[in-house]
Length: 142
Picture 1 (cartoon, rainbow, N blue to C red):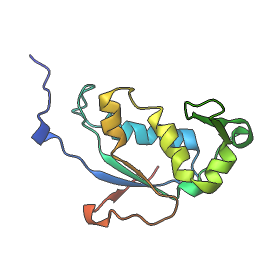
Picture 2 (cartoon, rainbow, N blue to C red):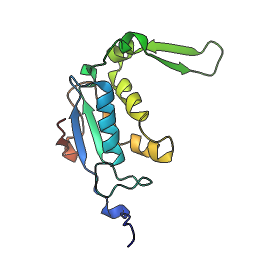
Picture 3 (tube, helix red, strand yellow):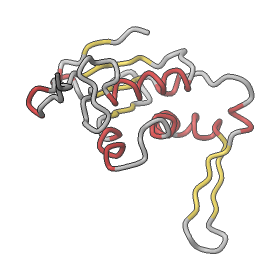
């Protein structure tokens, strides 16, 4: 008996809305990564995109445990001398909270072409509104 591999037209992609208010960043990111990857579906295949689209709202109201807001630093480098920029998580959460959630989820996805394709199905918004009403997303309770 062969293991069935789903065809592209057999894969059903749902849309989910997750409210991040009061949720811990790591636990939220882990759940979102599983949904994007499709691991909660019976026809999950590691090398195929079987996951769903995920919309995260209220990203500005997430929790971070411990002293991570002050201690953890996000670094980026322009490639030029003196081009290293550092910001702690408290600044990122205050100015662009969606970047903090995106960074956490991206670290939990595969580091290849599939991971880039999966990351495009993540939509994060700082407030409670999103422009994806036409897709009729389902609310996901955790």
